[in-house]
Image (cartoon, rainbow, N blue to C red; front, side):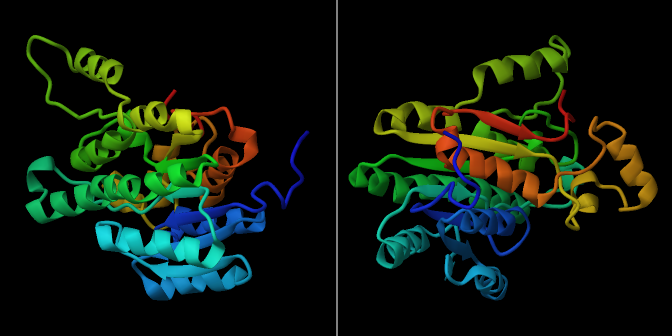
Length: 282
């Protein structure tokens, strides 16, 4: 029987990281609309509190840095203390650097990207999985990745690699004179898809599902950073010429996919990479 709108996450508790803005804010708000109790977790207290205030009955803010093991312990304890349980974790917090030649990426930028995008998910797994197993009622972990994890492009090599570590473990490598780049990428894709799929296989027997959502870039002020092009109508038209549905990802698109994966409607989906890109990666 289809679940009634507004009740698809009734009696569920979720933590959504990086939920002070963008995709994370939309995910947290959508979950709350569907009956979930949501911990809005963000390093920016002003932004996070503003999101939580839009539905104070169902959302509570908790300041955290996803690269801190202590903060992960704190946010999980906060969820159990306030709401009594935990069912869903959305690892949405992420960062990048402006699209530029790889040799111009600094060590500081590289470390920040891998600390937030990879270490953050590692620490999430360490903090959340034992509690879900102990609780004994299953659960859902959703990792927000990127279309760049499977379709890497020049200029964001290390960002793409960090996202691929979560969904594909697919790295952008230079072309070998003996092996065309497409052969190299195809081989890596065939051997990749480890992190989310590995977690899904390991925790599936506990009825804990782990899936990844891979969105195209959104129009929330990041066009220039991700494409390396000035955000002009002409450049957007050029970019969207390769998107069959003709637009960028909207936060609600990602929120709706996460809602499906977190709800009973997605109860048999495990280890999947859900691409939300309007057909860009076809």
